[in-house]
Image (tube, rainbow, N blue to C red; front, side, top):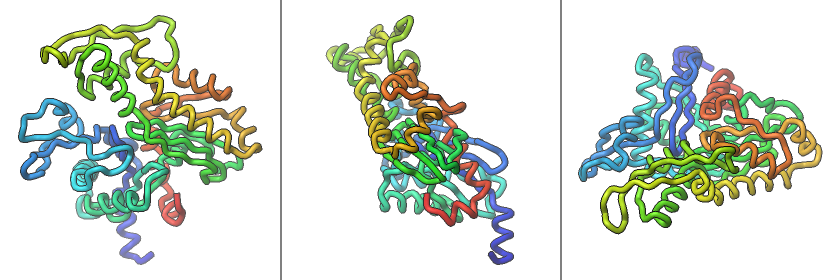
Length: 341
């Protein structure tokens, strides 16, 4: 590396980004996670100019006037709107690197393991256009495993299940490589949609995505609860067109979530079925680690344990596991830039 290159590396404000469908987290080297905001952008319809990004934009979902649209530029873990994603990344990078604007940062971005080469290139180009100097793409299950503290470099199996907003990442890792990896385009967004569809079908009640997410968090579960919960839900009646409130139970929500959770469990079973016997034996003791926002659904660890007959542990900080993983990679970025993950 030239003297000029070494100076850039020394002065650069390197960051890691968990570019999620629902939320974006930014990890700054030596500072930890410094930003957690929804992956939402509000734009003016005519000019496509950005009105708001992140939390401020999420508050506008379903509440904007006709000249503004609040949207999620990421879908199923990949870029659905290139221009808006670039604007969102630029906003987040500038917010974190406001004191280092003259030296563009090196950026590690976590991406789903199943994305195509075209999608990988789109993420890289968006980050470069948003102000990154150098971009490393790190597969999400690897990032989640590192962030959850799994011993990925050992000659033994570690299994991670990362349930995000747009995708669920399932991987078995040994010797810093993925023995099996599967990206399932089922996550928190699909669960929210299932809840909204249930209310529409059963009660003729229309609700927005924010309300559906609130219901999932408040009373969602994967197995029966000792004491079932209820919740008053406000929405618009599809027949009368008037606002209305209905009372729903955790039993109903569990039934609405059943198909999505079953699809996730099926992929976990596929991974175990393809796992070499020696590594499968390791998992009897080590078990499965859950990460991501979806892992926080009540009793999901219990249901997965019953389906696999393996111990299931939720990561210490499941929402930050991927971001923490990108941060760990930043500490030894030269090594990772020479590898393919």
